[in-house]
Image 1 (tube, helix red, strand yellow):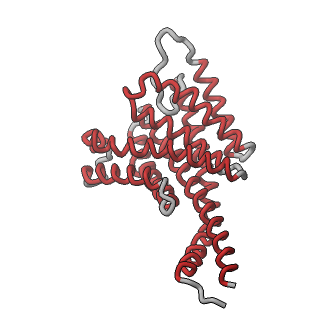
Image 2: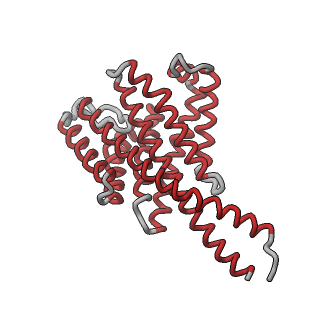
Length: 283
């Protein structure tokens, strides 16, 4: 019997890592799905209060188009029904894809005519749509469909993260003022978070780093939800932007946790296949 090569030993060590974390990743995937669903439900409720579909912060309808509040109530109701289906894991795959379609029709398309006039929110609407695709990927057992959804969703998330990172530098003064007073070193955190956003967006497409990029991005956004958005919301519950920011950050953190779980599952499957191949070679 041949002595295992260093390369094989390294693979075996990596195999031991991924299966050990995969059970935990199942839990974090389920938790992320719940977070996304609750975030979408909350945004739909805000749409009722605003009497317009505000998910993804689309521009106002033309003044000659009188479709609200009926459109807001109808689209918001559909979003709640679909989000509850995802939350209860009832037809979760179809419900998640339907959420992506609703966001595309009701938010992304409304941004397109003036995309660059409000480019950050335009990318945010694309990211939320991509997040729904990531959630859908967690419900399908078809590997090819799952990979397409993960790739498409990751592109949407990365576009928003990289653009948001750029915004931290372009609009640094605004970001500094946005940070609550109790958090020190506003300038440092403004630029540091900008770098983290860009790194997170790029890391989603590096196979050796995509799991960590997704997991750490989720932790970062959840940190903003706790440290930034909750205090701002509590300080002024009537501010529409802060209400949306609270829900968006919660839903987005959930998306990244689901994506991390999907990457852990994929890596575990790949490494188990390598383990079987290497065992045969050693024998």
